[in-house]
Length: 355
Image (cartoon, rainbow, N blue to C red; front, top):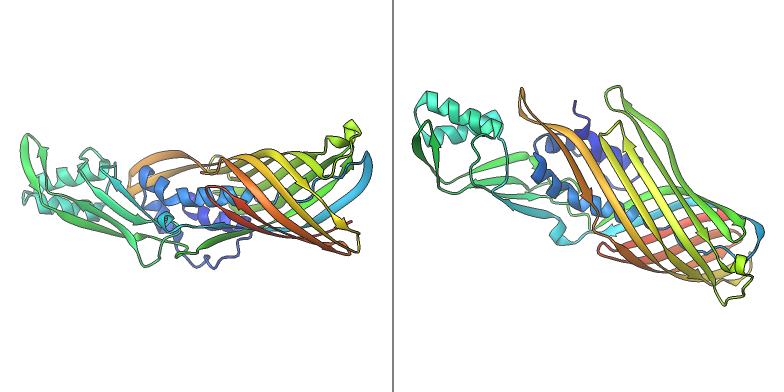
């Protein structure tokens, strides 16, 4: 199965990413990476996806009223800013079973004895022989012109009681390349619907219809839900701004246990509207505590019949964010823009229609 090899393009499609990446061959990249390098390769994407999904939830706080009909629907656009240090990674002395061709090349450099060459080759493929190494590679956000390089310093290895010198050498894995080619900003777009207000409470939904990938993988599913409550409505208090306590959660699933992305966020936001339905402006601000996770399960197969089942869990680097934004309304057409300050900063541009 090569389902995990497709997961990048699937995620991009599911989130309606505005990025010309569909022609990229990510399949060979994923299939060529064991656990530790894959974590480094994908971690910047985990940070960006988590940061984007938790963007755009807060703008207008629910009004201070017991009952009313407030409906808004539209598209939430988010862009995570990608730093240059998220485009390349380095690892030292990690477990990296080689493909047959790479293992053969290293074995032939160690000894001319055919029998020992085969044993060394098999050990390098299975991981039983684990040489010291230095790895440099682009991440998913790296340049498509760069590829993963394994450098083996000169060292000693013992096989069948004999000690051999491994000469310094380099293995180039040209299937492992950057995918998004230094994007600068990683954009996503998702649909959103907000319904309120009942005792100062508003519900918000994000959803995409299930997408069947193929018979092997199964379906992709995406759903998000949030709730915001203005405590002044129950307290019968008059405040100078609309205030909201908020909680949001989202899930993105591919197949059964292949790829799962989950996000949660909760916090406080405030807004103040100046104007009427015909025309108004709304400054807003908020603070969220957040979490995002990406779980991946796949089989790493460096050579036929040599399979390593791998399951990893990655956590996005954002733990909290501060939001500053401005909303503009003209006869129910709303445009919200805000900047989100966090470890991975994001910019939000949301287009909604509501009444």
